[in-house]
Every structure is written in C-alpha cells, then in structure tokens.
Length: 451
Image 1 (cartoon, rainbow, N blue to C red):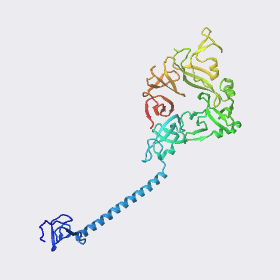
Image 2 (image 1 turned 180 degrees about the horizontal axis):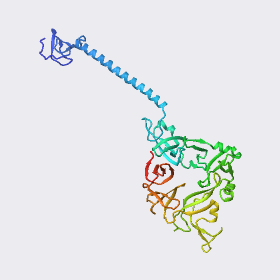
Image 3 (image 1 turned 45 degrees about the horizontal axis):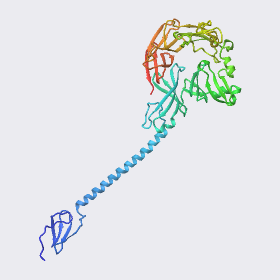
Image 4 (image 1 turned 30 degrees about the horizontal axis):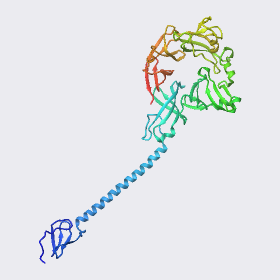
C-alpha cells in the first residue's frame, strides 16, 4: 500500500524535530523519545525512554540532593532552637519572683496589676522618713500571677514616689470595713484584719506582727479564746470590742489589760472620778457642727483642753454644736428658760473638758476640717465659699492668735483625708488615690496619683 505523506510529530511533546534511526524509526531531538510508524501509516508507536546517563541529568540529580540536605538541616535546626527556648523559658518562669508594683512589668508574662485602694495611714519611721501605708485589693492582669491576687498592705515613699515594700494580708478582697488602722496612745499602729486578728506594725521594718495572742492571754477571762474583735470608736481610746468564744461581749483595753462589761465600760469612759492615775492634760482642735437650735450660727474653730485617760477608756469631745441648755433633763418648750451654750455641764463632764476657746472668732468657714492639731502645727482644710464645687484650700493657722501663716490651693476635686508633719514639710493622702507633699512654706511640691 502506498504511504500517505503526513507531518510526523513526536507523540510525547509534539515537536517535529527528529532524527531517523532506521527506516520508519525516529528519535525526538527535543525530549529524546523514540517512536516508529506502522505500515498502514495510521498508528505512531513510541518508546518513552529517557537517557538518564546524560551529563545534564547527572547535574540535576546532584543539585537536588544538595538542596534536600540543606532544607533538612534547616528544618532540624529550627526544631532544636524551639525546643531549647521552651526549656529555658520554663526554667525562668519557675525560678524568678516577679515585681508586684503596678506599672513594673519586666517580662512579657508579668503584666502588672489593678489595685483598688481603701484604708490609708501616714506615719514617720524612727529616722524621720515619712511613709504612706495603704490597703490594696489587687487583681493581676496575667493568668500566671492569679495566685498572687488578694489584699496587700503596701508602703509608699511619698518623696521618691515609689513602692517601698508590700505584705499580703489576705487572699480575699478586703475593704476599709474589713481591715482597719488605729494609732494607740503608745505611738504604735495597730490593725484588725477581718475581725479575726490583731496586728501591730513594725514601722522601721515595714512588716506586721500578730499580737492578739499575747494581749488576750494576759487576761484570764479571754483565755477561752476570741471569736471576733473590733476597735472601739475613734474617740473612745485604745479599746477593743470583743466577742469571746463562749458568746460574751466585752470591752478590752490591752495596753492596761483591763476588761469591762458593757455597763462597766460606759461608766469608765467618762467623768473625772473614773480617771486612771496617769491622766494628763491634753489639747485638741475641732470645728463645730451645724446646730438645729441655732441654724444660722457660723462654724467655729475650737481649741479644747481636757483630761486624757491615757491607754484607758475615754469619750473625747468630737461633736460640738450650739444648743439650748434648760438646766436639766425632761421635756421643755421654748417658753421654758434656757441658756445658749456650746458645752453644757453634762458635755463637760462626759468629755472631761477643762476649758475651750474660739481660735479664729472672726472667720467664716465652709466644709472645714482639722488635718493636724498638735505641737506648733494647726493645719485646716476648707472651701473658700458655700459652693459645693469650689476647690478646697489648706491653711496653717497660728494656734495662739489665729492668724494665717500660709495657704495652699488644692486641685479641683482633691480632698485631703490625712496629713502628717515631717522634717521638710507635710505629706498625706487625698480621696483620689493621690499622695500630696507640701514644703514648710505651704507650697505643693508634689501631688501624684498612684498607678
């Protein structure tokens, strides 16, 4: 049969470039495929074989092998680095103590904490260094530090503006009603933790000591144990209200180891005939309160001298207001004779008051309070006018003649809660988590908010 003329293409790659090996047998010069033609010119059969011994293919094989080795080595290196990093990171987390001061985040996982601040007290160390103690309820931002959450007693340096030290006092979140401060007549600061323990502060080492057991075991009746305890009111001295384990309510003054029933207590805390042998004259300053009998009477800065009962029961006069004295007890009307008095006979007896006087008789005050009233320092706080949004001012008053020695204007919204005197000035806390520092001339040198 005659053969038709056709264009012969490589059945593998379609190229027409070829060489004839023998009649009707060809080899594609593009992909090295060998193929042949059937006699009927219909089918093209091919043998798809590559010549693997070509120099070009040998080079590709070597390159691919090298690339594979490099990729494998890089992969193993990455795995090794990841493993070692994990080991050292774990070791650091288990062996380091992280800072608990908010704002101090030295590691990625230590993200600080949020603190709600409640009770506070300013005091001086034996060196004269002022310190601000605060009760803080802390919530940590990192899950790694969740076990640290709870309530802390934090001590701040108001001059350097830094946290000096802290002590965890409870794993619970405590507020000012759960943890209370009080300075006793011996000069020490005592604290009641959640009505369960009585602590005394070591001012120099900034740590607390549980003194309840020592105090209670000194009294036979309290050896049965104490269920709960609270401080007596601020103006009733160094006492505790105790509930014993057998359910008895008692008033205990630990510094003199005196225990009272409720009836005995109310008799012992007032009057001149119940004074202890070491009672001494003491002077305090306070502002009068608004009077229902004389609502137009202005508020006055009063100096009171009284007999202080030391570490024993007392009822210091803390609420003075002008009233009508009818000369006795009973039911009276305005038709009955009376005298206008600031301190009646009963109030003088109750508070053991010896004398009183108006320090600034010509002054007019709005929302006033006494911040410091001891020694040569009489520091007061007040608003300049009757507007409740007016900012507060702080003044130093000459306690002898009532003249103003200096005045400091507080920022809007600031209201100082406590203030103490130290060598270079005054420092204290206001109600916005801020610590204020003034020099001896009354200039505010610092007023900063804690983190």
